[in-house]
Picture 1 (cartoon, helix red, strand yellow):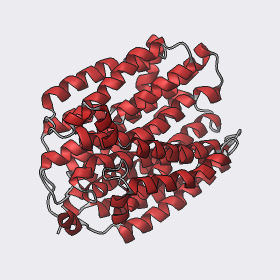
Picture 2 (cartoon, rainbow, N blue to C red; picture 1 turned 30 degrees about the vertical axis):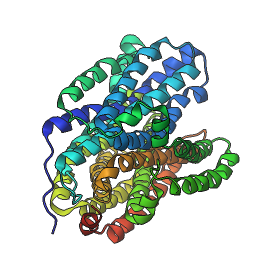
Picture 3 (cartoon, helix red, strand yellow; picture 1 turned 90 degrees about the vertical axis):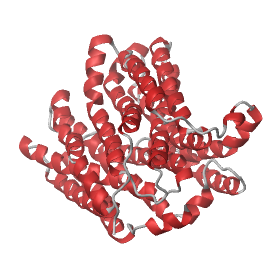
Picture 4 (cartoon, rainbow, N blue to C red; picture 1 turned 180 degrees about the vertical axis):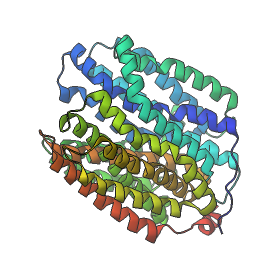
Length: 466
């Protein structure tokens, strides 16, 4: 029988939420600034899109890195350090002399915004004082709502800022947000334990604790995977694919020999449930971003809608996900993550199949209705998988697991952009959209099967391992 989840102090949740909205906000705001940046720096479209790809790559590495640092040195310290990094990039970005420097600043910004989720999750876990692994659905729901709202409003806010003060404004807006976040964090977040404090003042001790070799091998492995996926729509970089098994094998070998590894391979091998959660999240993210990126392109280029109308037509996808988050949180609180994941996967399958009905003459109300169906799964899948990850993880490994969990979001995002590039190529058509719909429906159907077959309660296992 599913027990009610523990409560989390509202002040703690509020402070964490203020930090977690920075990553989706900055990853989405930049989209409407690319044209101005391209013009100001006199670069090509392909070159300026590295501001997006570079952010994804840096965040994919930064999330587990910041999570591991949170486990080692305390989540509050890492949370506030992340805010400081974002503040610094907001100051520096408007002053850079060229695109390469701006890409570097965006990468640092991505690492800074990566601190809030794993560090916040670790603080929430510690605040519950509950070793059984019951996920606090309300707190996770608040984080999920903040991420969805900021991602949905990012292009709207970014468009207003760019029109008002140029592309520099999408970086400057981080200054008041991070300043407020740091103030709230300093007052409301609980103090860290003393762990790691002495090692932090010893360079040798610090380097030994954070496992530099493991971080570098993990970075090479992730860049090999994501770099190859990014190249699929143009000219595949086969050397990166060949590098993957070598880097991955060395990573596993190195981490198994470490007393305090960056990536706890032994933990993962003992927890196939956790590996399954990561794989499911990559699949869910692939489908979500394939829909979220392909629909506005199709709206504008195949249907001839203006950019603002295309954005409005996409609002039901993000907006309904926010609206049903309390429903998903209540379901998870009462019955655990399994029913939420089954519901989300079924709705995702239905929505992607409905996309095959879109053509040049599909009425706008139908487009909106299908967008609403596609918005429903977001809360159920994201919250359900966060809850499943939470209960499959030991308390002392929450930060690292939370960071690695977010890495698989970026794997899915880049998989989706590769799919869109392969299908649409140089010409956006309705049959091409149908191919994307069928491919994502197939992934969604697999998620239905996995959610029904593999989502078993793990409370007893967690209590045994605690």
